[in-house]
Image 1: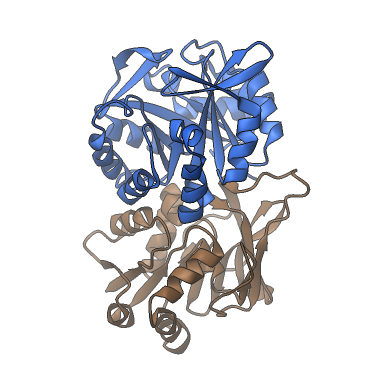
Image 2: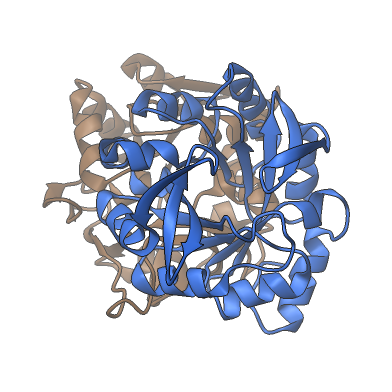
Length: 251
Length: 208
């Protein structure tokens, strides 16, 4: 039976791990290579690096981080943040990333997803959707949550599937950093709309939120940051808890 | 001993290289090349593959003489070869991804899309699934039945002779996830991304 995945996400800035509260107020939480290794040894099903300020700053340092990490961690590694082109994707994959997560570029130029999924395969193309509620719908935001594209998130999710995305990483902008739980309504609506796996993100504050993301949000995988890297919970705690709630996990 | 990972522009092979180097350390030399002479003279060959069946077969055929060299290595000289993901799928006679494409024809069978049962099963089949070992295989030494392996694929290999199947995994149906035919081995899952148990499989192949 296919297991639901738990993916710790490390927000990386200038080669260091940070986690923002609603994308501001960054705190330093350590070295990404060491953290990734701790997570993979602890049973993380995948590791995700998000290079959060990559759009604005010199991002070459991330390549070095990815290269070092991929030599130590033998679980899938996803890297996102600031990816603009097929060339950027190629470079990250060559450094040892197994998947890339594309956000702004996927909105601005749909060819990036179409071309890269053809060139490298859908299995390594994750489209990251940052969605914020507006009335009775959700709109897609870009540039690390700073720009509203006005695009309807549900239609966009379907379009990205058609363009060749292998997975969708859906983050609720309203919940990110709040620790009050995933936006279940958003997750379940997107998950029901597409036939590719959805990774739920944004808002995890406790282990019950992970359970909700899978049971109610119908997510294939759950991504979380703060609850893991400030030592609040280990990956093992999370897996044991999910297991006790009848959710299939790799233990 | 030399183990060659065939580099034929089949997508991202850095993880395969990293994992083999991690397991090999200084004991075994890991080459990454498409040089035909180096492939011929190596002791073992790893055939990775990512993307579509068609794109991998096309990439293989783009390198003049590569498919003949692999054929000589695995079929005539019967030296150990491990296919990973689409590398395994290419053992088939034919694949139906994108368009009908001829495979290497080493293990008779076809590669077809996994039946998602009208959307009940999401595709790609991504994540950790357990393997059901149905036949003793040298690459499963000290690998427990029901171990978790990392999968990412939408197509499955359906061999004509079920006797080549060494493990299956349950997703929509019993998907073939490992084969062994004499000196030819293949895994649909990614041992290079399957943590300690995956590295054990790589170690078993290197130690053959």
